[in-house]
Image (tube, rainbow, N blue to C red; front, side):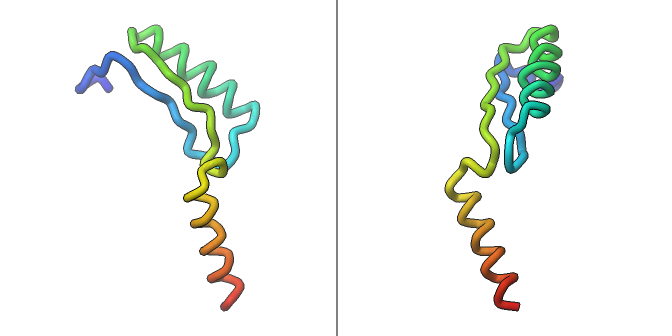
Length: 68
């Protein structure tokens, strides 16, 4: 971020599920720290498990493991 200095950043958790702890850390601590440094911060609080393509990928892996 220091090299490219974008005006705004979007925080996205790379977790399957977003719980309260995730929300507090990302929407709270990280967002606050970045805003202090002058960034406009957007937060996309959506776990990877809410993404249909990710769910399908998980299912493919589960099916492949069950065949073994």
